[in-house]
Image: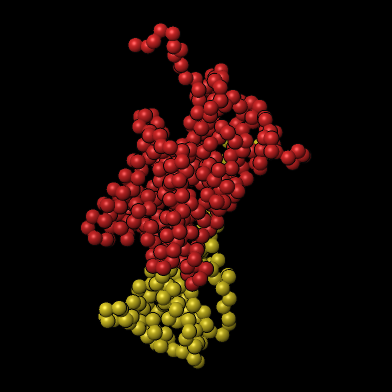
Length: 123
Length: 313
């Protein structure tokens, strides 16, 4: 089957732009929420966390909170420096969550550095 | 002075080794729709890159150039699979773009290189300038083939060490990143004094070396090219040569900056072919070179003696 050469450039450009738009759409918060299941009986809180600025720091924050009993949902929005946390108040308090987030990190040279600071709490 | 009786051979012998043939006149130099479309596509993506880069330099929040690098998807795929998180400054957008480029490559070979990649566009312009200035140096074909393998070593090293360090180690010498941020991007400018300038110098040197050795970076060093080439070999849309029409003038080979051999094959399977169609535009015989989907349908002119009878119905 022959293909007219003039078709190549528009098809290639359209495929690439399609991939870019699909990637952008997937990152929208509404899409992220649709595909993560949130149970009913939880308290939801939004924390604005100074130091939450990229996927790496986000993974670090998630690692800290993931194992804690009482944490039901956990989503981070790095562009807004926001962590949306659903927790069970019977098992864990908001103060405890904040303390875990703000706990200093021990560096290789022995210094302790605070990686995250909760600057705002939106109930 | 020349001896009286000796024949003076004025070479009409071309590099394919075929006997001299009457060369048909060159096609009229005009911008056909295919060429215009490709230039438009290149300019579009170069413009988008420059726009993002200037927004990044101006400090617009969330505007970074790494975000739109499909090679970022290759760098982050192992961290993404194993640790369910992408690397800093990369996201699922890079993975999506990488997927898109893979689809493009399986359909149209390395068309990404000649239609979208802004580094490819700049390299191509450099190569065209080198051709016009007659600065090109011919290196032996075996060397040319051998140097193509360098990029695979680069790809393996980059993917492995990026995974181990969890940081974009290639960024300091990545032409896409360094050129378009003018050596001012983060992770480069923040380094020790001069690192940004050193990066810029290395990348500019690589680009300018393209004046002498066309597409030096793209053909020998680009890790994304290394990633795409195996898939490009399977690419569905290929340049085909009709042996009954071809006069074996060799213009297609000369026109190809990627040093892909067109004049001796019936269907270009070489993974380096970017379907830029420069061979097609250079061909003087209408219909000798075409763009086709799937393997060539025209029968070979002189079948090889070993060819089995009835191999193709």
